[in-house]
Image (tube, rainbow, N blue to C red):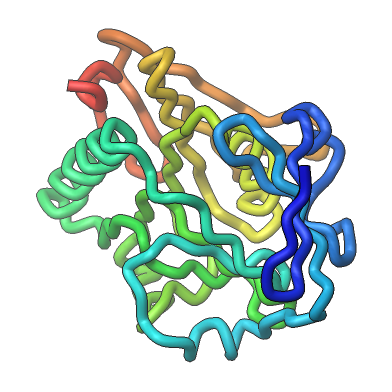
Length: 226
């Protein structure tokens, strides 16, 4: 099935097809997942945006990301997703504030990973250590210490593979993946990652979530889902 709108042609493909591609490596084809369906967008108008154009556009509270010049605007997250995002924000913010460690912000806020390549992401929750708060202006200009994503059924590949690779490449210290179905928190230490090995610690139930990016943080995984 295809649809043409404003110089773009969109195709729907089986979800497994999208696992062969990364957005920045397919020219004018954009592969994204939406509720388990891979949306393949063919841009016929060559309207790439620079990071400067994207960042000076009208301010909005809608979630959107700039993937190497292409604007990605997923549908609004479900209520259940936002409950977990809010809970994660509260747990992290309370700890960071109590210990004066830096700042925690919730999406949407632009994180500029590569200005020249027009790569701007919006993690669900972002933490910046106090000694690196100079990165924060109108946007976050560089890799944060911690990026947190709450998975949705249609975003698992994007969160687990595509974003993981980009966060690792651009120097994010730690990446958390929160799985609402398994009710687990996966903590990925990107500072210890190599080309072939990535350290993952999965916490669920009463297991206490620990973090190298947030020394001393100790909260049972179930607290993220209460």
